[in-house]
Image 1 (cartoon, rainbow, N blue to C red):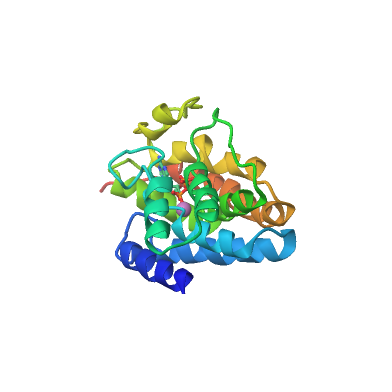
Image 2 (tube, rainbow, N blue to C red; image 1 turned 120 degrees about the vertical axis):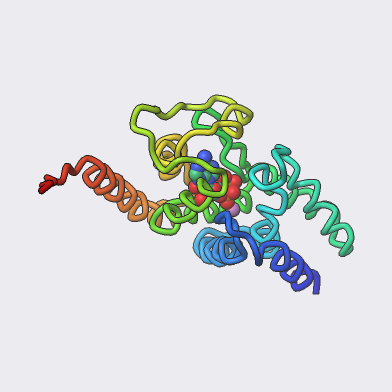
Length: 218
Ligand code: ADP
Ligand code: NI
């Protein structure tokens, strides 16, 4: 079966990742996408394959090549003899899925694409999203937080992808904006609680950051 071969290949590639894009991220995106499909409709096979392949050549991990995932997904599916019209749809979902900056509109015009993007975005917010952001920031040698460095609303994929900011800024540049960029009602209702948790987390973070503990030196 084609789908099993894709599972095998993707698992092998992501098993050793420590940047927040590990095999468990892919698995969660597949599971959540299929859950959303049950409520919202769309073609399950396309959704499962696109979710499996969505990070196959992400710009954050491939040395900075933007929009390269669709090409790699196409090669994999062609090699397995998957029909070319469906392959094309999957490739366009893979290229469209990534967040490209606060000021860059999402281009997802199929229900399958919207569902995969929603599932990927749900995994970027909430407790897991926070863990992934700091894991990725560490991988990229980014500081946790620099109070005097403010977030930027990027209006091109290039400036967003090349930003070197600290991880707390990433919350304002992406994570807190995702709630309003979810497409399906099913994802929106899961997303709200995860969003609220991040807001609460940031409040606690600043409280701790600003705590002045009285020191007595003898
Ligand atoms: P997308 O393709 O939409 O970026 P991914 O599945 O590739 O989605 O996940 C991106 C992950 O990388 C998220 O968990 C996100 O928080 C993290 N990430 C991306 N850019 C940064 C950044 N500048 N600082 C911290 N984390 C980041
Ligand atoms: Ni992803």
